[in-house]
Image (cartoon, rainbow, N blue to C red):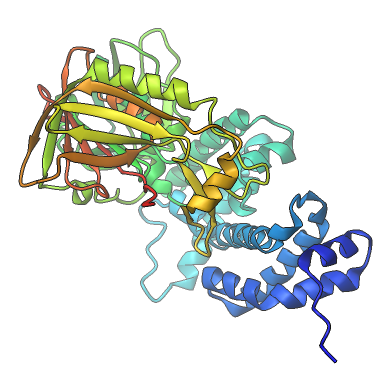
Length: 474
């Protein structure tokens, strides 16, 4: 007699929703090993993976009513596992991040083998600094750093809006640094620099380029480097600007988190760098205060290519108009996945034609869709079938915006060069570099999977780097 076919996921889910716990146990048995392997690749500690496995299935059971398509249970379960792994990572390393945040000379001097007495002294110092805070500031520090809650979670728990949480965290961090510095008797001579309109412009735009990733603390800041370089990057784009006014900075310093900083438009101001904070003063405005993020900044010079295969020179204002046309067209025309498994990221393809001496921005209905995250949290390009499923009810369209460009090639035989970019990032890059509409802007390319370098023809001290997006090959 033929063996009975095992029940489908859809049937087991329906039975579970009806109250049959044994049906859910079948799902656990069916996917338990797969989910455990997925977690083990992320957390690396078997005991943690086992604990997380229980949490994943408990969460899946309690949230089963939110699953709209029972045939996608496996992908939905994988997304829950990935999220739990990310939460574990944040909880596991939150203490290390806290110690790094409040690192000051004389506190973290334990040797490489680990000085337990020194670490206990660090813990006592941080605890004493915490006691110096008001209750409101202590609450946001404890929730965000010790318990690992995000800004949004902290806001929900404390009944605040997210901006209020960010403001309180900024003030609390500054107060704790000042208290720790005082306890360790550290004093350095502040440095004060004059700021002009251009420096304030860069400081204002650095907010857009600084990372919001809580696991990359240093990239949340703006780096002021020896020689007057001002650098901000989130890993997708980078702004580099050299200022003569800041060329006498004594040592590299990272100010931040900079994405929280609001710098108004102004003609002049001052920047004072102290031991544990920096103060920006603008006439008629309230002082802007930023903390000092300890440690060294990333080696940003290493990611700037030194050889290029193609140059395109365009008028900055014309490029901005072309980007705005694309953005206006994209906004209402991309359906989203109601289940949230697939993600849409605005994307345009830059096409350079040496024969026509033109730069075109091209986008279609299919561009910009990415599938569910893999075991490492990375999203892969959608297949043609998946894209058609998501966009099938929308008529096919293609939109192109072109401008004149002076194009020079070096050893490239391709008549048309293509590279995919985020149009918002492209617009921000042009505006951040401070171009007048008629100013000539040079774009340098090396190949379709490496960065684009932006620089104004008349200002070699200003640069921007934009990382490309993956384009579907089919």
